[in-house]
Image (tube, rainbow, N blue to C red; front, top):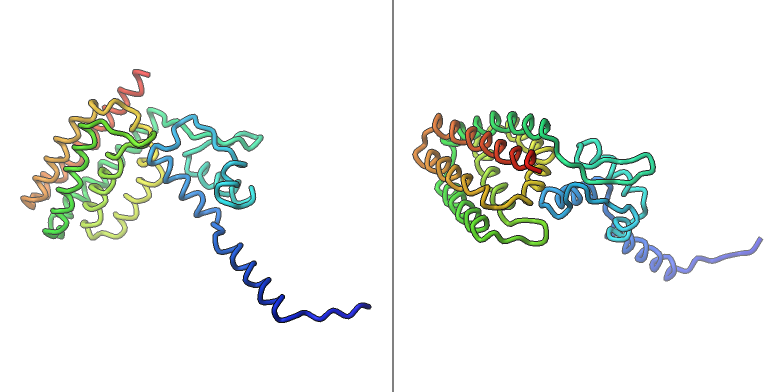
Length: 241
């Protein structure tokens, strides 16, 4: 049997290379979260095909974690997988939009009512900044690729209010709805003519005004009305083809 002496330098070098190779590796969950983020931002539109080969190359990984990531997203109903493994971004259904937004209206309406007791002056200032950015993005009708800036402002506006409810379980439900259903639907809706969303600017103002007055019941009604009206706008646009 041949004698082989492992040199300390070789061992150290191997460990360094191994650590470097693994440093940039991303788990299947992290990859699924990044893909979902892109869908929510409108960068991947309904009907777009997601190539496992291209994703594996982009994330510098094998196809195994990519397949696992896609299965996670299929379970969330944001993509569909064929028997051959072909992945396609799912198109929201009218029923799915209505059901998701009915639940959202109740959850976020309650959050707005609770938030009046907790919102700080800084929170209200941040809400105003989001509202101004939201209105500006819609009125200029600017987009970045398939994604619209209003999506980011809108999400932040709603998140500030949900967080200010100080109800952890409620925040969890709202976050889950945003990640699994609402975000992808709004990413899809970002393809709408922005003029259809002009009404939403006024509704945000009504919500913010009620919060500034610390009127919980009016804030709740304004938030619920805003979300239900958004449902009508999106579903009518979908029905119109």
